[in-house]
Amino acid sequence: MSKLFSESGKEVIKLQGTRRILFQEIPSALVVIALTLIPLLALANEDTCRETGIHIGNQTMVDLWYTRNGGACTILAHGHLIIIKPKDTLIFYRDMICETEYCPKKPSYDYYKHLDADQNCRVKILPGCNFSDM
Image (tube, rainbow, N blue to C red):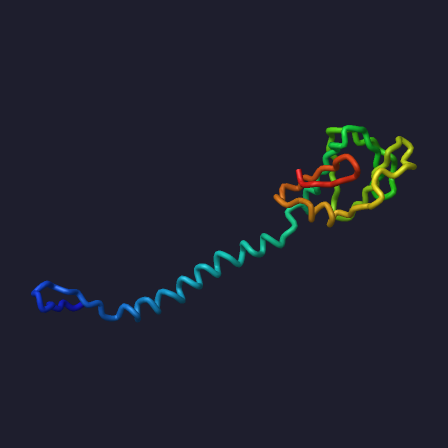
């Protein structure tokens, strides 16, 4: 800094080298921002539900039945949850012998994951085979 005096006699401060300091600070700031954002972006693409699975809540107000990976017919009482893992396939039925399908579509894990907007690993099945985030 150097001091100058104006015509009125008041002291005026002239900043020398301000541009040099500013241009030295910008690359440092960009590096800090990049190092902060890269891990956050990596987390955004990570499947946080892969280990725990996605919880599917039956909010149809009726009991449903389902088969997992072609296995046994199991009841899903209304208000209860089941968990689907990445390699699972669930088919929902209206009857206890698993002959009348409740949903014409057979959603996969990826479909449920797509519905989970808040990434809390929870979705719900509603009347009419509509699925939504829980």
